Image 1 (spheres, chains in turn cyan, purple):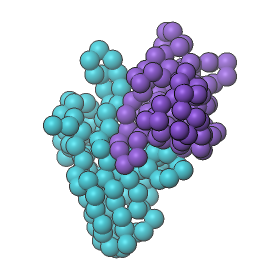
Image 2 (image 1 turned 90 degrees about the vertical axis):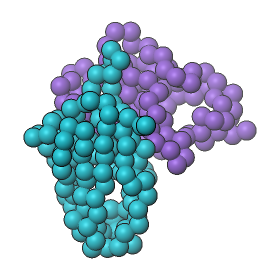
Image 3 (image 1 turned 30 degrees about the horizontal axis):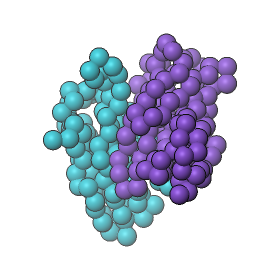
Image 4 (image 1 turned 60 degrees about the horizontal axis):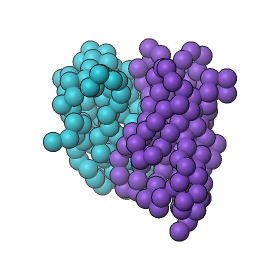
Amino acid sequence: DADVTQTPRNRITKTGKRIMLECSQTKGHDRMYWYRQDPGLGLRLIYYSFDVKDINKGEISDGYSVSRQAQAKFSLSLESAIPNQTALYFCATSGRQGGSYGYTFGSGTRLTVV
Amino acid sequence: AQSVTQPDIHITVSEGASLELRCNYSYGATPYLFWYVQSPGQGLQLLLKYFSGDTLVQGIKGFEAEFKRSQSSFNLRKPSVHWSDAAEYFCAVEGESSYKLIFGSGTRLLVRP
């Protein structure tokens, strides 16, 4: 199984619908992140969490909310989806891994809002 | 605030030619620096990272990068490009004690046969 699992992998939804993207990890890391990727803009940070009770806004949090249900789970919600939220979304964790330090990314969720 | 600039949106090189992808960062203290690669339709793969020590860092797939503090740069290099290197490359920085990764806008590499 992957260290960081995102569900769904692909999703098409209609404008105005509520949608949740889920992320779970087996790394045992405290820190988790949600990024959004758009062509030509790289990855931009939406929200991040350093533990279950510590959640912070990133650079583009408007229109999004998150929930850290447990150390291993971090969900991203779009309360009322709009077409410009069409993007590739990545979840990530960070922490010590094998004597080093780094980030582990999920495979991404491709979201299309029509 | 931290920022990362990748000045080249696209780069085209011939197979077998050398490659250098530029990355400049803005951060007051010593940053942690990363290079990721994303092949079409795929997720992110870590190529290499710099935390401290030797400023020339070796990574996977024959890539290396050099940290130059005086130039606030962390350029990625490869002596001989293969067609399979065609992908998008992202430079990223984590400021000391910030615990979050900030990405550049990416450079798309095209490889001519």
